[in-house]
Amino acid sequence: MNYSNIYLVGEKKLVDEWKLLLEKYSIPISSQVERNSIVIELTICNIEQKKKNISTLSDKTCLPIFSTSVVNTISEQVTWTQNKNLIGISAFPTLTHNHLIEVAFLHNYDIDENFQFIENFFLALQKKISIVKDSVGMVFPRIVSMLINEAFFTYEENVASKDDIDLAMKLGTNYPFGLFEWCETIGSENIVKILETLNESNANERYKISQMLLKNK
Image (tube, rainbow, N blue to C red; front, side):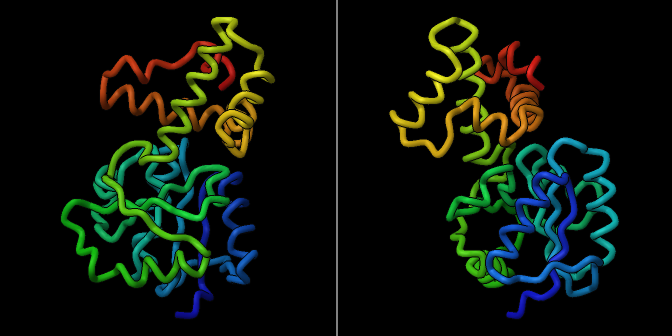
C-alpha cells in the first residue's frame, strides 16, 4: 500500500515526534484530511480537544483512525462519536524510538478485517505490533509512569539525589534514560494524567501520586 496521505493531529510534542518518525521512512504527511487519509490522533491531556478531533475526523475519513489511548480507552472514545472504527495505540512521548507499538481494539472489533492494513502500516515504520487489552495506560506507558512516580517517592524520602537515581537506573537496568530525565522528556503532566486516571478507575493505593511529582506538573 502507498502511504501517501497521513494526517497527524494532537499535542505538539507528540505530533512533532511522529513527524520525525514518518520523515525518517520517507512517508509524506498531509495537511488536510481526505476520505482515504490515515489519521493519527495524538492528544493525551486535553480531553475536550481530543473529543472534538475524534468527532470531526470520524466524518472525514473512511479508514480506521489510530488514536492514542493511554488515558482515554477506545471504549470511552467510541462513546464520543459512535465511530467504532477507532484503534488505540500506545502513542506517548519518547516511545517512537521503540521497535514495538501496542494496539488496542474494542472487545467486539473485527480484527481480522483490518489486521493486515494495521500490521503493514506499522511495518512501514519498522515497528512490530502487540495487541493488548483496551485499558488505561496500556503496558509500557503505565509501567514507565509508575516507575517515574516511584523515583519521585524515593527522592522525597532522601534515599538518593535525582542524579544518582538516574545513574542507578541507566547503569543498573540499562534504561535509555534516567527516570527524572525521562519524566522531563515525556512531560510530567502526561505522567500525572495516566496515574490520576488509573487511580480513578482502580481506587488502588499503588497509583497514589508523589506530591513532588504533582508539584512538578
